[in-house]
Length: 137
Image (cartoon, rainbow, N blue to C red):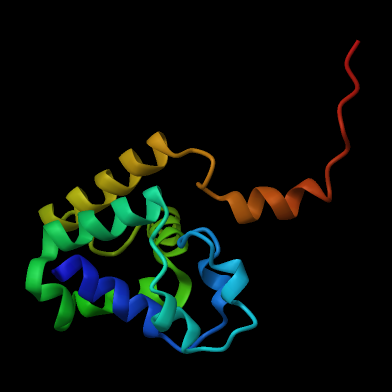
């Protein structure tokens, strides 16, 4: 139940749908349909994004919907679960050292180890245009 509630918070955030392309299955078709199209379609999260949200719900429970943990859910809604998790890992979140946040960061690392294709995918895609292909042989 909490997972679905968190998913609705993410889908209901008024921001460009393109922010969620790595997080939701089949979302690109909804990009031109308008802001309410997401809530009407209720697309499923991709496996890595689902794991991130499930981990967060498991760790925080009902507290995820009240401050300060709700800021984490707002981050998921603003940037998408994958981008928010990447940012927290790269910025060495200030909650480091607290058992709950350490478990969250360890969980993110584990999820990205299982799904390496999504970790920093946007950055890798952007940097590809600046690299030269390596000729072998």
